[in-house]
Image (cartoon, rainbow, N blue to C red; front, side):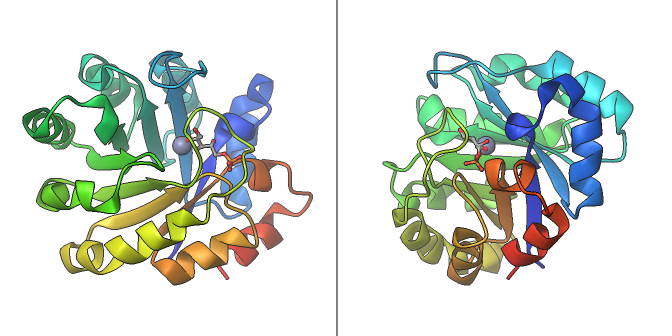
Length: 216
Ligand code: DX5
Ligand code: ZN
C-alpha cells in the first residue's frame, strides 16, 4: 500500500510538534526528517536534538530520517538514540562500496531500517548492488537541499527502472521532491511505494483531501 511521508521541512518549525500531529491526523503515515549540514548540500536544517524533542512529543510516530550530510557514520548513533526508525544515507556521500555496506549494516545493527538515496545525476543502477543490504531506496526528484522545488520528471524513469528489482526483494521505493497532487500519482504509477511531500502537504488548505489525491 502506498505510504505518505510528510516532510516537516515545510512546516512552521516554531510549532513543530503541533504541525507533525496535524500531518499525521491528516493522513500522513510517517514523518520525513530532512537533515542538512551545509556541506553535502548548500543548506542547513536541523539535527538529532530536534528529532529527539519531536520524538518525545510524538513517541509513536514513524520517523523517516533523510541524512543529506557528508559524514553520516559519525552521526548515526545520535539519530538512532533520538528516535529514528528508518535512516537513509546518500550513495554520493560514501567513498566506496565497502563504506556503503558498512553504513547500511550499522543502521540495521542499530535496529533501524536502512535506506540509500541517489541524487538526480546518479544512475538508478548504482543502488542495485546493495539491494540485499537495505530496506528502502530513495529516488530524489529534485536536487537535495531545499523544499519547494519543481519535480524533475526523469525521476519517473528511475522509479520504473528500479520497481521490479525492489519489489522482488521487498525493498520500499521512495521518491522525494516536488511531489504534489499531479506528480504523486505519476510516481505511484511508476512504482513508488512511499511519497515524500513537504510544500504541497503543509501548504495545503485541505491536507486530508491532498493525502487522498496523492494516493491517487
Ligand atoms: C529536499 C528534501 C525534501 C524536501 C521536499 O532536499 O530532501 O524532502 O523537504 O520538499 P517539497 O515536497 O517541498 O519538494
Ligand atoms: Zn528528504
